[in-house]
Length: 95
Image (cartoon, rainbow, N blue to C red; front, side):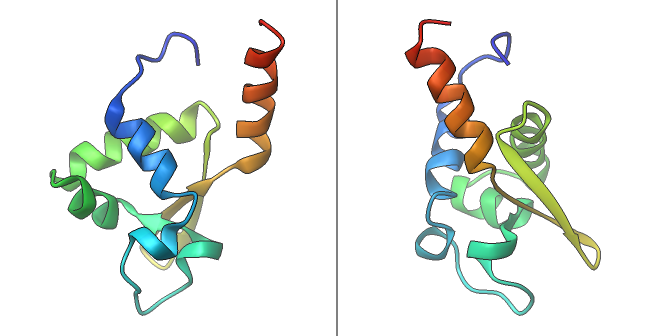
């Protein structure tokens, strides 16, 4: 995780996913607060192509800050609050 470069886009994504209902429009399947949001929704919010959003989301998922859930053919992303709290505690202790 420490080797992953900091990106304002990734920080924005993490911030938006704290309250996905407020930052992403509703959809037909699932609940943004419970299931998460798709790469398409993140791409629209960032104003980038879906592939760019996919890269950011997959990186955040790979380092454990996001969890994924597949519903039908789509992957939904949401914050892993437990992991984020663990990382925050490590940095607070001067790790």
